[in-house]
Amino acid sequence: MKLSQGILILSKKEIKGWLSSPSMYIFVATFSFVIGGVFYNNLLQTAELTNRTVVDNILAPTFSSINFLLVFYAPILTMGAFVKEKQEHTLDLLMLSNLSSTQIFLGKFISAIVKGIFIIAPTIVFPIILSFSGFEDWMMLLTNYLGIFGLLLCYLSVGMFASVLTRSYVVAIILSFVILISFFILFTTGTVVTSDIFSQLLRYMSIGQHIVYFARGAIASFDVIYIISFVTYFSYVSIRILGVRK
Image 1 (cartoon, rainbow, N blue to C red):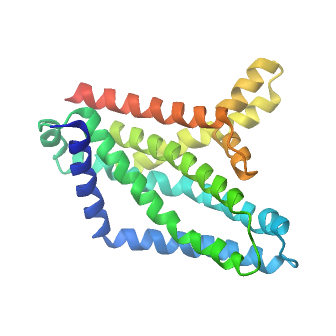
Image 2: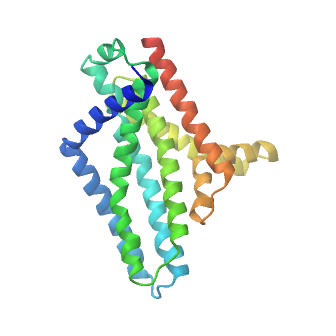
């Protein structure tokens, strides 16, 4: 079976099953409710709506809240990727199929990405609302969404890795969260390290550091390289673990 064909078949199966589950609508509803409340509150507190105030007082804190919530939502989205298969004893059957370890992982990973995009999608209403007040900085909006998407890929790759390692939903969530928080606090650790080189290295390794330029309307090559490297590493390790099992 071709690589892309196997990935597509498994992704469709995963997405179809998720769309038929009530949890999907609960996820979207709760996420939209919380972010909608943040956006509305920021909007009320902004007296004068100009491109500058909209970006600084409304969009920046709103996207920051989206990023914060995804740290919690991503592990939940991915916890069942392999845990469910293990508990239902279907992972062994999947491993015995014509699908390779790479196809199995990428199929589930792509379905998790689609789920994440589906949850974030309702937030596109916010810039549409702001456009009625004269907001026109669409490039700033685009880079913010690209930054959020990049970090979402990082969060999901960690969640998939945790799901491969354990048979428990709770352990998968906790492990994902611990790993992600560890990468966030690297920036704080870097600020107290006396060695300049080591300090800069720790700051670069921190996930939160790589949303800054996106939020300012710029796309930095080192941020893109970090995101690609981060996702590739956790994906590679997860595929290797699956390969051992196969």
